[in-house]
Every structure is written in structure tokens, then in C-alpha cells.
Image 1 (cartoon, helix red, strand yellow):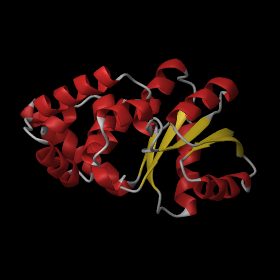
Image 2 (tube, rainbow, N blue to C red; image 1 turned 90 degrees about the vertical axis):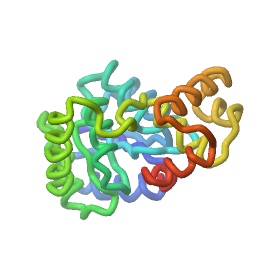
Image 3 (spheres, rainbow, N blue to C red; image 1 turned 60 degrees about the vertical axis):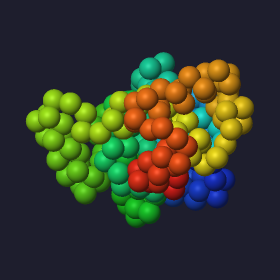
Image 4 (cartoon, rainbow, N blue to C red; image 1 turned 135 degrees about the horizontal axis):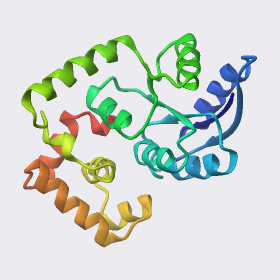
Length: 215
């Protein structure tokens, strides 16, 4: 199977490439440092599997890129890598079309199992995360409403929120994610409205609570 790895750390890409290329049934054919580069490589190389970090500052995040890639190149299976075992992010990446979700500290054997599983057209989720997913699913089903307004944030809003919380200005954020300043301002207003936040300190506190500043 042909594989592309997207991670903003070159040493991580190199390490994963060594593990995967050692397998007889796998070949890493490209590496990307952010979501935009990952999108371009998928368009050019059409890999069977894309292994992608969830967050790759300062370029486009893995969450945003996942949705774009699955919409235009549905044959490429996407395996998300992250440091955080948070079921809320799991919901978003699966909803965006990812086929699997693996923690970066997982053993090599789990990464290989995940790649082979999604290549077969199945979904791979670590058993611990699968339990959380089922529990959260039933909780949402019972309430018939989002358990948290976090669930109502769009992919772009999820990308912008932590950047605002980290202190970046509207112009800086616009340059990072390649949109206009007015677009950033509009998303910021929607974020504040959806989360019922009145100030930047409240936004920072919310981002900390959701572990968004750890990405």
C-alpha cells in the first residue's frame, strides 16, 4: 500500500517512515508538514493511506484537511495521529471522514495494525477510545441535543479558537490559515456567540479546559 505521512515535525515523519517501509506490504511515498501540503500530495500521488497529525501549526490543521481530502479524494483512507485521547476530538475527526484514530505514544504494532485495518476499509479506534465513543454516543442520543456547545463549532472555528487563546492577532491568524482578516473576525464572533463567552480571558479559560492549548 502507498502511504503519505503528514506531521509538522520532520523527525516524526522520518521515524514513522522507517517503521512503515520496513514492512513488505507498505511504502511511504511522501511527507507533508501541514494540511495544505498533505492535500497537495494526496492530489498528486493518490496514496492508499494518509497518516496525519491532528494539529500542524502554523499551516492548515489536520482536522480541516481531513474534511477537504475526504470530500475530493474519498479513496484515500485517513489515519489521525494525536497526543490526546479526547472523545470530543474523536467525534469530529470521524465525522470529517477519518477512518482511524491512534495516539502518538502507541506501540509500533498498534500503528501497523491501524494502517492495515483502515486499508481494508474498516475503522480503527483504540479499545479505550472506542468505549468512550460508545458512551458519548448514547449520552448524545438520550439528550437529543449537543452535550456541549463545543460540538456546534465548525472545523474552521476549532482551528481558530486555540490560536486566539494563544494570543495571536486577527492578522496573524489570517496569514497562518490563508484567509482574510474579516473572515477571522467573523469566525471569532461566531465562536464567542456559540460558547457564550464575553472576553478573551474567558476564551482562554475555555481553551485550557478543553486542552486545546496543548496541541
